[in-house]
Image: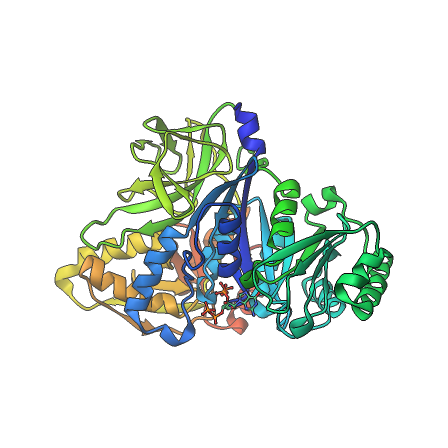
Length: 526
Ligand code: G4P
């Protein structure tokens, strides 16, 4: 196969959903249908539930699971499908944002009973920022959910996207009979009343075919005809170009746990979802078919064995072929690195690979060379865009509780923040370290891991901060004046960039008014 054929057959995506909508179940069913696993129950949910936030064993267990489910690849028809897992817990939202920078499209799962939920909204905002194409799967049709038209309305209004149904449910909840495939004009019916996993496909000539009534009864046939008329009148047909631009989302109905509606989803997905496309860097656009290799690290996972401090860095390949044992260039620290055991993930199996292509994700064993967002190239000095850190929401001072272990603490904080667990700021005036996170759970994770992996102990002390914002100004003198004036409220991030620590919204407003030329950024990339 040529490299361009390899690129064209790749589909790299993430499933996003509010917790409990059915992401894990759908992932598993896709793997089953793709022949990558043989039994249901093989994919463990990596959910960390609120109630278990203090349960460290639980966190460790979840970490173990999420290493093995970080990437799940399988072949389906002639396609190579790469599913990138995103954490369900909202405290790990930043992980999810970063993972979404490494995909080419997403499937969004919505529970038909609950409709659009808070996490759905947040995740879709990220997709819209990047114009990521979205396919919607409305799940749990075996439950008494909302009216499908109301659901579509809610999705369009709340998420501010246009939708186009591709399948349509016949009945819902107890009366759910199956779905009508609007493009293939086929009925896919549950067999019998048991809503078991067996499906039956009935091809019909058109929506007036008497066979429909024979199979689902007069009432449902009439309702379906009325619904289909309405759909054709209200929704535009699917323009694949618009889908690729993120302007319209095809919608499928089904029930993941019952294997229902998954085939239609998967078949349409591989057909219309984008193969790896061009990506922006600070030195122009990189195309997958470019001659030289490039990629970026979007996730780092620490080894679970505390005695071995090596980590796995997950690299998304953006251009050309990645090869084992070849020297590549880490742009940030200008180091040449060689990987003798790059790992690929086929479903639940990890294996050492000799080569990988754009769209693929490889796991690289790392002894501490990588940071999230690092670019790896064949020598080009380029930095991929779109993998920013976000202004954290919660802050704590770090106080060393064991002066004999200062080095360990330092190293632990460096490494954990390299992994993207949290952000580390150092105050200018007194050198005090501040940890910033997006969720409270991270503090527990850090404290626990500092102790168990680095044998360091630290306390996290309350600090009243409203926001930490990166600052910049075209005029360096003006920036210096600002940094001088507010020196008690200035810190540095790990890269040495200046950050303004605002104690309240009012103080931030004051700073903005007094220094109108200074720009305050909520993202580290500006
Ligand atoms: P998540 O990863 O998005 O958080 O959701 P997950 O797949 O874990 O699904 C959440 C719950 O919803 C699970 O039940 C799962 O079995 C159920 N579920 C998934 N798809 C369907 C569906 O089509 N219909 C119905 N009725 N339920 C569905 P649970 O009780 O939390 O776990 P389990 O013990 O069943 O695994």
